[in-house]
Image (cartoon, rainbow over all chains, first blue to last red; front, top):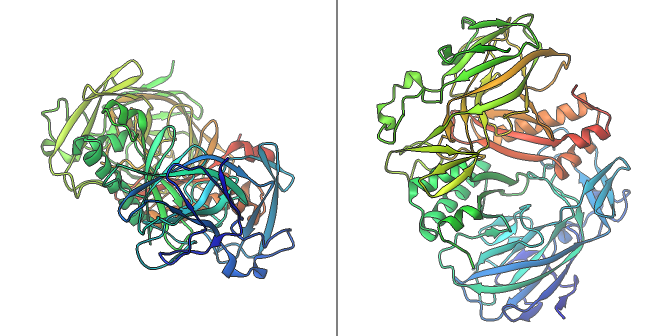
Length: 300
Length: 300
């Protein structure tokens, strides 16, 4: 049976100074339980964001100390199975998010799960599409609050990061100090009002060191695509970062000539928004795996 | 039989001063033939972009004078059927596009169509996915080169604009002066090296004035989604524009309360890149039609 890490083991910033919640072997299956991003502080629609203790927002569960992981290693985390809670929370906050300039009334909405759908205001049934907002490893120095994305991962809010996906990180410190939280039962690209359907949940995963030196991380792999992820102050910079990292991967790792790389990125690649509302904006560049296979390249 | 506008009728800037190629009745079917964006100047892989006459780049066919169209009207153009040519052209250009800083060698590639696939360098078979890059109406004043997107439409490079889609514009001058060109047999979101699979083609379409005052244009409708489109100097500004126009549409036209609009845009909407390489960058915001229907709203 997989080792379980209960949701009492939380941290609020990725940092080399974190104390491990647990030591795990590479390849060992672990189940992480997570709180929602409000650490369960908003239980009903009467609980407004004004009542929040902001020191308890965006908890991640962990960190996991992966035995043998050393700085510079590439860590692959396979998300084997993901469960989300029976209810999700959404909020509207004046002054926050991409519509913060027009939203004037604070509101909390609770969305209950019915089968595979979330019920929104007794009006809409929204298909469940679980993904993980915060996922990462400790940076080699400094502390990055969980609300912020960066080279270490963190609050990337990337829709690709769901059940069946693998996420690759460059290890910053011994043991990697991996953690995850901020699950969404559903979210759209952009995360317009700074929340998806925020829910508690659990993920069964395993983490391993892989021999992919120079892989531009954070990097995601799903059944159909690979993606580079980049976060920056503006979406223009984030787009440039994601594009150049994919170009670097396709030329240096896959061995596609540079001009062919550019043309293929233009005709079968896809530049996509992850989120435009966090302290840094996150953009990904997706490329289809079927094309990599034509060049004889496989990640595993 | 539909009236045919041959590809000799081209223009290179949307402007109130254009002479109509043809007058058509609202709802009358018309077939527009188009050149590729290079006006057929690159015929083989030996024809490099250095040899281009830049006065003949991005031709649009038309313009069509739509009888009865008046400034301020909303024009809906239904793209009933679309054909693309037997070959497509791609180019790599040092200094141009999102990888222009790393591309050092100019190159032209010809991609032949085999069945429903484009063959790339005898290596990859790329599924055909035809779309229209340049489509629009004359602005009420000034001349906008076809390479530039804007409130009138133009070079939006939006993947949604293909067979079966409808595009809505606000009429700027009497007769609307509609035109289209810059067909792509396939393109990915972002248009990284400033080209898709550039091809000649033809589109069968009809244009009508519709009673949708205040619709935030340009606006696209496909089988599954609606989308607002916005172009600006930066993708950050373009994203803000597309987001706010969708919020405006959902609150003012559909009648969804503002907070619900924001939450739904966050959980089932999608902010997407169209292109990041033209004189203005273009972003769209997609929202699913099934959700509009739950609020009793239909565009037609």
